[in-house]
Image (cartoon, rainbow, N blue to C red):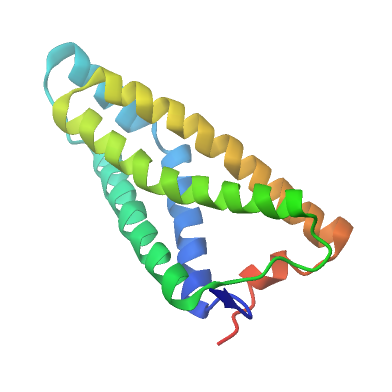
Length: 162
């Protein structure tokens, strides 16, 4: 479904997830250390860093489901005029991967932590790198669209239609 723009709630959820993901990347040292200890000793230590990481991860998972629901209910704006079919495809694949990672990262983290599963921790680490690469791509594309192409793409994520 195509909408004339993003709703106020879609925009708020987008930026809430951005903030939570930033917290996860910037303050993951406590969880990394505790997970290493868990693999070595079999004991889960719930420090402040671990608790923040778990709560932020669960919040991202819940907000991802909410965002997916709003996407189906409200729709998303059509690509800006002038975007090539290749650009549209890359944007759609990138957004799909973002949603997939917003689900798989918390789930792999929960499995790793709750089961002391090194393999799940490895999956979580690989997915974290993939998310970082997608974020860089997304930010660069948004900045190019805004400052070079001046096509209004980025403006849609700050100005709601409602």
